[in-house]
Amino acid sequence: MLWDEEAPIRVLAPSEQRFVRHGTYTGRSVSVRGALDVTALREAFATLRRAYPVIGCRIVEDAAGLGYLFGADERAWIPVSVREGDLAAIGVPAMDPAVQLAYLDVVGSGANEWRVTLFAHHSVADAGSCVELLSRLWDFYTGVLECRPINVAPQALPQSLEWYAAERGITAAAKSGFEEVTKPLALEARNVPSDNAKPAPSTLARPVRVRLNRAATAQIADLARKTGVTVNGLLTAALLRAYARETDGGTTALGCLYPVDLRNRLEPPVAASAGTNMAGLASFAGEVDPAASPVELAQRISSRLTRDLSEGIVQQSVLHFPDYYGATRIHSLAGHIAVTNTGVVPVFRTPATLELTDYEIVYVSAHPRPSAGASAAVTYLVYTFAQELIVGVLGGGAHADGLPEAVRAELTALSAAGAR
Image (cartoon, rainbow, N blue to C red; front, side):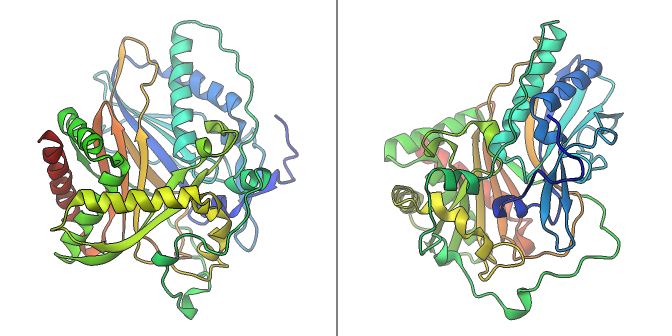
């Protein structure tokens, strides 16, 4: 696909602008055991770029920091970063949204063990589309090794959730749906801080992970079936209880925000690669008592989500984002608990000689700047890989050291309840 290099393709929507200021890339890092053909992986990444032209595009900011999507600069494209190093570490290649919107980093140990990390700019790729990219990368890689002809039809550029809302006739309601999590915005916080004269170096956000084995994971699913609540409700309840226990030691009022992928909740559904950030926001606020039943809390969380979905509150929440994010915000979400549940990681198609042994979600700020808004008190990332539940804990302030063990204790109690 060809575009005029001097003219923007489109301005980014508010749901996409959220990730421009810091140059946020979302990453999927997998540990690999076996013979990895780096040449074939380079070819697979080049094929991925042809199949999904958006990852070769650029984001250019104007003087006010507003981001615009531009076509690729063919002369500047960086194919794949390959090096030897410590597989326990996740390296950050030189990343620049004004150059390209996806990077592939490969680290080898010299002992048939590797770490492969795909980074995609969060303005054009959420969890659903990032997993789609990673899945297709390994599919292309396997096809190259099998000498199978790979013919790709370039995907159209993905659209924003705001675009789909307009197309499907979704309009803004009087309420956003997260009023109960909202705090007053101080007058001095309304202005976007000035940028540093010298850009800060890229920073990696790598959550501390709590991992359950397959048996314990299955027992939580069993508890959900026995009690008639969703697994997501149970996990969200456990994470709120962990925060309450670690920070206050007892009953406390907490506000929680979590994304809900709307791809399959719109009619007709939206393909994974057809949307950029397709998550509406759902909220829950209430008293959290670590001594009470986690199932009762899970029921309250699930009931709130069911109601807000049935009334269309979540579906239209994105239309309120300008009031909560960026320079024009008039409300604050400071101190909320953020929970992102990306679900079950699919089984990727790989050669028989290669095994993916681990999977992590990380984030990179390519050009960190002073914050333009309040952040979450803690962010939880939830997913299941190889039938094992994983919870990443990011942030937590003064309680960051104790939160992972508090999370483990709550999850262990859920699995024990499921085994009874």
